[in-house]
Length: 593
Picture 1 (tube, rainbow, N blue to C red):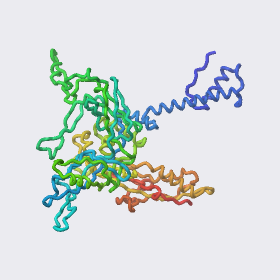
Picture 2 (picture 1 turned 30 degrees about the vertical axis):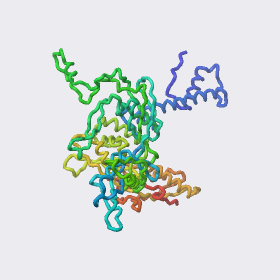
Picture 3 (picture 1 turned 180 degrees about the vertical axis):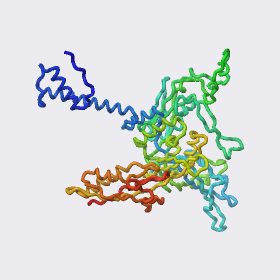
Picture 4 (picture 1 turned 135 degrees about the vertical axis):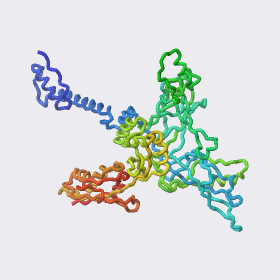
């Protein structure tokens, strides 16, 4: 008797057990007849069905986690997203502008130019919460645009003896830290794991021979662009020149699960030609002896004659300098930064200055942030990461559609600041093809706030490399509408109303805890559905959604009646507006009947 083929469609416990029982009755009817649920044979069948059920579960789970549209674990979405071109950033950075003050001795009724200091790049300041910030570029107190006021006067003559000079400098969150690695014999695609936590960027990698390794997006990229000091007469308007430079020693950075690693190529000093700059004449020499013409043009961006993905370090010591955050939340409110920690000060001619006066100027330096220091302090959620991976795959390093602009904006490196929400809309009033890009940041508490000018300037520079030639972009502030939700529900008879009210508030908070997008509708019907799903609620009788504009909330004028749908189920948002429930404890109130 031929046996019936095994059915592989049984995947759950009951169907697998039923198939096993049927199989045993059909083919082992003479040797096994006890199918009682309490028998030992039934135990064996249950065990086999249980194992089959578990294996089916893990098979389905692993299959789902292999595709970005069905994966639910953040690490798997990140892994599959990298295959689509999505790159995760390091620890989020916050940027802004800080005012620095220095008291300068007077000379002939004006500040003594010899005592006007220069505050050097990477000078360190701190906020009251413990976050550190680095000065992005040198700050010159001798700049003619600085504000100058009289600080001290002579009691007898009334003449000024000291002036207070105020200068502004850009800062970015974090502090510099260095790690050293002793590298042994040559290893292909060497990978180094860093121990420093909360790394935002790799600043510099140098070996013991003084040779520098540069960061590239991909190891196949063998050319980088460096800034070179401009010494010509155009220095005032263009302080730096952009120069292409070959990168034989290069690495990529991988930020994954809070850890940072560097990976190098597999080239060596021996298999890299001495003359690493490609010679255009070699293209012409390759044409010798041919009686036909091919499109064999010289690519000026391909500057190296090697396909080894860069020289890997060997038999040396690497010093890796990184910028890392000192705390998780690196945003700062106005006036929170007042503490210079480690400042590097230089003068035009130190040797000619009175030491005590020189030290007095350095000791007088103070700082104060007149605007908030902002960035995206929250990691992207699972759904945000999934959508950004989709968009990264579609953009292909150029911005054509509105989704492309959003994806590229979110990919801006964290060292330039981060934005929480973006919306792009065509400017209907513009004569040409103009786009309005609305942005929002978040404050130290994770609430929406308008992005500062530094972040918007950095975003503008970032988008220039990707935008279409005929696109013009205006980067504008998004608007915030804070909402208040009031509701009434009918409860069951045997329910504690105090506990039920707490459960209802918690359910609404969980539903709307994720930040809404600019231009996204607020669905009042979702409040009804959420409350009706709470155990103990018979029905939701009323829901009222109102804008909240009291002290500490957004003052943007918004009228619910003008934007609510005819059936009252949803509230539309203009393209530059994002709804937000700022304080769930104060902004959600309910009545239990």
